[in-house]
Length: 258
Ligand code: ADP
Image 1 (cartoon, rainbow, N blue to C red):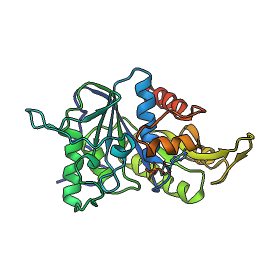
Image 2: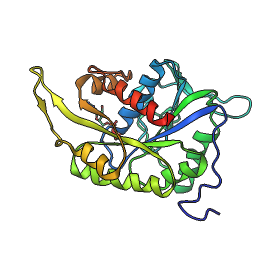
Image 3: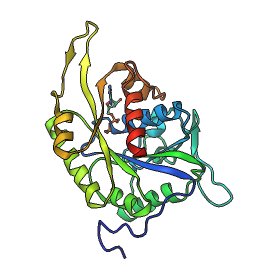
Image 4: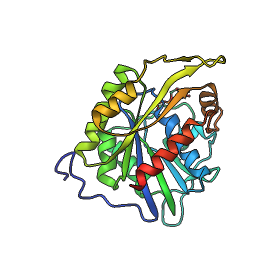
């Protein structure tokens, strides 16, 4: 029986996986999954071996964002073989579900799925395993940190106050369970029109202020860009122009090395 949220004594690394990086957010809809997918793609472009595990059991989006509806098979050790798209190994509830069926999983089952996604998937040799967390600070996040040794967490937020308040809670949850915060990523930082004028739709400077307040780095600011949204919907997460997700991946790589 675990002794509480900060008990991570049962954790260990995943054999063959060098860095496990969690991408979380306080609030939903801030672009956490989009950022996680784009980070995975951008890291893979640098030649790194990358896996992306969609731990958002109730709102899985990795399958759709990578345009795959394959069904994973098991190997002879009864591990799930992840789906591979462009060399990135993917695992998501979306691969296990019938299309459009809701995920009806009670708490204990959610824990078991989460553990299985981390422990019983043939991740193989990876430089980075990116975990796309559910929004908020609930059971699944705690299960993750009690199951594997997470090397660092990135919190995605928009510059908007409601998102920042929740991002703060996510940061403090990770601090409580002794997971290092690699930094914040401010998504939807602004929209730039064709004439080059920037519109700070969700407010200005929120990410920077919050990062300073929390004493964590602001790893990147990603603007609202049509190609980022379109590529996600078309199942091909891209590294957009200007290349904000790439810059984010580079900052993340540096932070994770430290
Ligand atoms: P979350 O995982 O936080 O719930 P998503 O990644 O699903 O959020 O993003 C929510 C919506 O916003 C999606 O439709 C996605 O395509 C869009 N989106 C996210 N980031 C951007 C961006 N930088 N520019 C344009 N659209 C974005």
